[in-house]
Length: 308
Image (cartoon, rainbow, N blue to C red):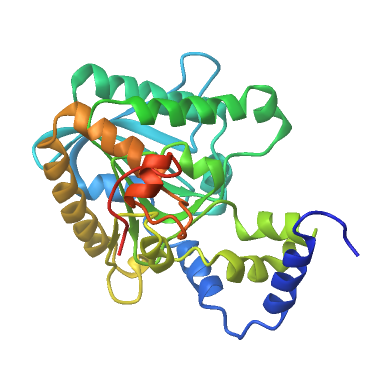
């Protein structure tokens, strides 16, 4: 019997999950988010932008094809876009490293962020990754530091920012380009602190128990909206975005346009303050309701309206 703090709680959760009903809605959602025919960032960019000029390289070590970044024209306005590209077939997926960015990719993303600030252009990020690349080479080249600096850059960037989870958003690989004024998620996308396989490997030392991990944190769009992790759920065509890329891009474009219109009307200082507050209040314990005067006065939570 484990003597670790919380060990009894973990055992109860494990026992409950072993008797979880089937089929698993969470696991089905994850499989749909990973569907090989879902549109990726370049598919959306080609449909919502009339022009797009892609940047390459991090000006330090090299190029990372898992991150696409550049400046385009969206509804007759310039827009900087950063996306995580998985690749459609085996050859392209290998080239794109299955959408798992390395430090070079995050440094390229920060180049694009700097460009947005310099030109006073809004920033859109499209998230679709199982996580940052965990290889030893990436760690040796500063993977953790690159993710941290990318998060810090997004917290401070003064231009309007919108992040959209378009498929699979997992771990720091997603959060590195996800700290935005508005966070949207497609109806059949998922967003979680770790991939189900990674969670299963930690909890049960067995990645094959990924379905149990998926049931534990239930990373569906509905769950993310319910807990205020995302601001809006973007509808997909009937059956999923993989069945109609054009319609999926049309829905995405409409939601993104509305968010940027609202954000552009705010002063920079107000937008930055709201962005910081948005992320600081995530995970606030229900015992101390967000906005409760006593809790705010004590410093336990920030003020602000809770999500419905």
